[in-house]
Image 1 (cartoon, helix red, strand yellow):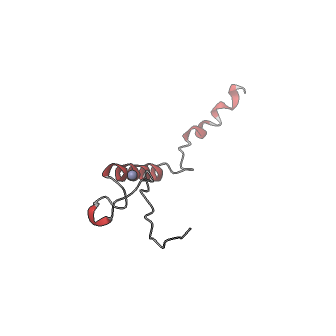
Image 2: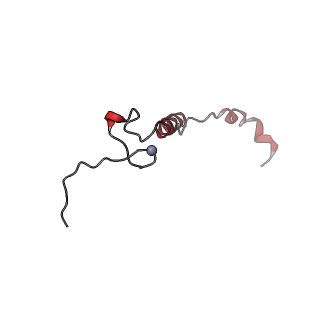
Image 3: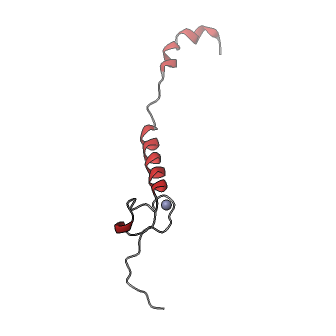
Length: 70
Ligand SMILES: [Zn+2]
């Protein structure tokens, strides 16, 4: 078994499918415009969902609920 030294394309980051070369693919490194959009939206969604940034206004009423029993 001979291993060729071929620069293998990593594939589409979104669907892992084959990607056409940059010269003929305006959506490089994605395989299609759709995958490009999918990946971008995923990116935005991830950056918006920042953990630990919760609104804890409910805790303001902590004293209020003390007499209401448990
Ligand atoms: Zn793709």
